[in-house]
Structure formats: C-alpha cells, structure tokens
Image (cartoon, rainbow over all chains, first blue to last red; front, side):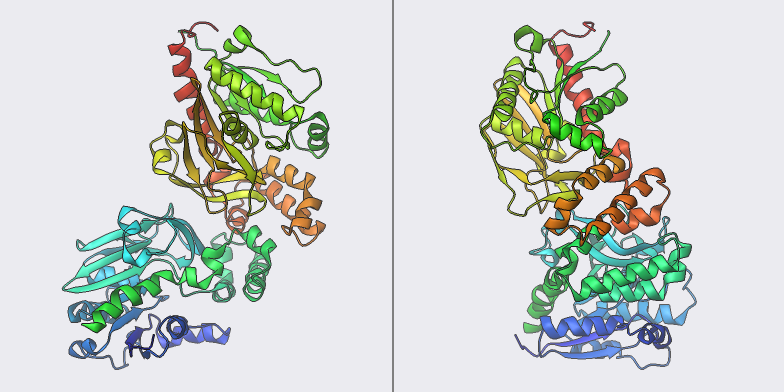
Length: 287
Length: 292
C-alpha cells in the first residue's frame, strides 16, 4: 500500500561509532530500519536524522508534525553515566519533542530506553550483564496479548538482542507488554504528553548476518564476558550464523543453536513493526 | 505419622531396546526414575516391573492397591500399534486408574494414560522433536495446576518423541504446549484415578541426553539433525562437557539452554509436586499414612 507515509528514522549511534560496523560490512540501525520499511511500507518517504552527531541539524519540534512516524534505532551509547554527554541528552530531548508533537514513535533497544527516559522512566546497567544475540522465551503478559503491537504474534517468542542496560522503572503512562527471565521490560507502550511510543528491548530489525557481524565486532569483549572460550570460538559462531543466514534450510544448525522461525522468518520477526505501521502510524496519518 | 510412599516404576522398554541403550552408555529408564524419585524423597520405596518382558507379572487387586503411586518411564514402543506389549500396558494403566493409585510419567507414559482413558495418539506431523523442547508454555489451567507450582510459565525441557497426543478423553486437561507439540503435558482423570503426564523428560540430564543421542546418531543424521556422524559426535561431546562442567556458560549459551535444563531442582519441579501434592495427600486420604 503506497499511501505516501513520511517517516523519520533517528539513528541512535553517532557517525564515528558506525564506521567500525561499516568496516565489517555491517548495517547501521537506520539502514536496518530502512530495509524493512521498503518491504513493509513500499513507497514510503524516509528521512534519517543523526541526533547523536552533536553538530548535525535536527528538525525543530514544530517541524516534527510533518512526519507520520518516528523510529529510534539501537545504539552503543549508554544512558547510565550519560547525564553530561550531549550525544545522549540530545536524543532524550529529541524523543521528548517527538512525544510533544504527537507523532507515533517506535524504538528498539536504545530507542526504548531513550523514550522511557524522556517520559520520566529510569534506565540502569543490567545486574547480570549482557543479554547477547538471542533474547529467549519472551512472554507476552495480559496487556501484551491484547495489544495491537503483538497482533498475530505468538504468546512466547525469541528475538535478536544485544544490550547491557535495561529499563528498570517505566514512566507512569507506560504499560509493560512482554518480559523474559533475563529482562523484565522487553516491550512496552509509553504514553506521554499526548504522544504514543511502542518499543522493544530486542532487535526485530536484525537478521542472522547482522548478529554474525556484531559477534565479530565485539569478539574480544564477548570472550571477556564469558560468551566464548576464545576468539576462535567467536569466529566459529559468527561463521555458523552466516551460513544459516545464507542457507535457512540448514535445519541442523538451527536445531543446534535453538533458533526457529521466530528469528528465521523475517515477517514473524518484524511483526511488531508491521503492526506499528498498520495499527498506529497509518490510522493517525489518515486523520 | 510415617510416610513411606511405595511407588511402582513401570519400564515399558523391551529387553533388546534396554540393552541397546545401556550398551551406548545410557542408564536404564527404570534406574533413572528410581534415582530421581528416591533423591526427591528418600523415604520412597520403589519396585520395578518390565511389562514388555515375556512372563513378567503385573500386580493386580489388593497388590496393586498397596502402591501409593505408579511412575511410568518413557519407552520406544508405539502406543497405537496393536501388539501384546502395548495392550498389556494400556490394560495395566486402566487397572491403576480404577484402583485409584495416582499415576505419573514421561513421553510414552502420557500417551498410555491418554489412550487408556479413551484418547488418541498419532505421529506428530512436525516429525521428531529431539533434544530440547523449546518454549513450552503453561495453559491457563497449567498455571493454576499443583504440578506446576513453582515452575515458570514458559520453560524448556529434554525431549525425544515422534508421536503426540491428538485427542484428549473427557476428564483430561492440557496443562502445557509448545509450537511443535500442542500437548506437552496433561492431567487425566478417569474411573476415579488421576494421572499427570509429561511429553518431555524431567528424569534426563545432559549426560543421559548425550548418551541417548549417541545411540540414535545414525537415525538423527538420516532425519537431518546432523550433517554427518562427526557432527553428531561433536554434539554429544558438547552436552557431556557441559554436564561435567556446569560453569561452561559459553556452551550453555551456544546451545541456548538455561536453568530449565541445567538445574535439576527446576527441571524436576513437576515430579516433586507429584509426590508432595498428589502422592502424599492421597496416602493420607486413603489412610495409608503410617503404613510404611
């Protein structure tokens, strides 16, 4: 359906941080979002803003109303300890402006954390460290089962994930929608100042190849954190993910790694974003 | 009050199948069950029967009623095949129901209980579910059921099966399911008796799963679980390494397993609850406290 949607993607990383990923052939968060929007909302007009680049121009608050939706991508930045970091504070201000402009918003990982912080919630380092590669056994709660973001989604699912911080306190206008045993706030909707945000702690926009590249990029850190015995094991794992990405029929690898269609079928993985477009963005754009 | 539950452990494997598993380094199903039950409650006294053995005698009448529970292991037979080994066990499940002796069991056992009470099992159209049943979710009835007290609403569990419960008899309740198998656990009430059955295997640990996999490697290669025998042997080694060294969090993470699989207390909550919530209250109700 080409209904002329105009969407703004706010890239969570500063440009310099994206260079290392690009050097590995990886996709930035905004590139991942752009790719899935071309399939889920063909013909939509997409603009990318770089709020973490402190000298980059941003649409002013009164200009945000021209957009039908705003998406905030993941980021390697951290809200805890970022009180005096303009790259962090600028994004929180931007999310607040998005709420005040009443433009439907979606965010994954950092995007959820920024929106929660903008609306008065708290973000802290996770006491158990990183949730890496796959967030497993995410369960919808009663509110989640009835929420339009999860229409057509199974009540329990896996999703790609990589994060060290988590939302510990949702703002008062928020509703928790999904959790797993590692992280309570895996998905939430946040109503604030007349605006509405739907967000997830995981990364529906990542495919297995994106995950393989993240494993390669952070291999040394992941060895230090105990995810791999050594960097060879990390490379082996990145190799398995790449093979499975290129050959989804390799059911032996999917079975070994405990990966099913929740991850392998992009239309299942993207369902939350598809629902955001069809159930929040489009109805608001038609008004 | 003395409470020494007497449990009859029913191991339905035919002798050749038992020998094959033991030769491959696995423990006999009956031994796994006796070990699990007596570890959970050292006061339990177990007798073991092998109903598929020619000439084996199953208890009847007052001899059967003298048990406080019947615990059934898994089995490599097929419940909807009409042969003497299967029919004997279906009839024995009916007798245990009628005697009011609480039943419990894994895999084949859940299927036996369902068929005994009038339900139906068939080959699972998804094929073999092997290794780990992922994302098993409690139904609303499961969330409120005593068998799942203290269990998470979603969990993983050891599994190995090709058949599944397709039709439940009246009086049965589905307690858990996942995307592969709709009935992962069931409570069956029939003719005055109660049976709690799991499609998965709380009695296994990583080592038993490894040895069972080793015994089935060629079959699993043919089914596409492994590219070749070497890949199967690598997997067996992976499970055994993690079993010997539970601190290898890297291996647990690679396999996507957590405490649901590696922590025996979490894995066996259903069995512990069967003892504490069904066996012991039934003993008291039947006036069998002190009978030990």
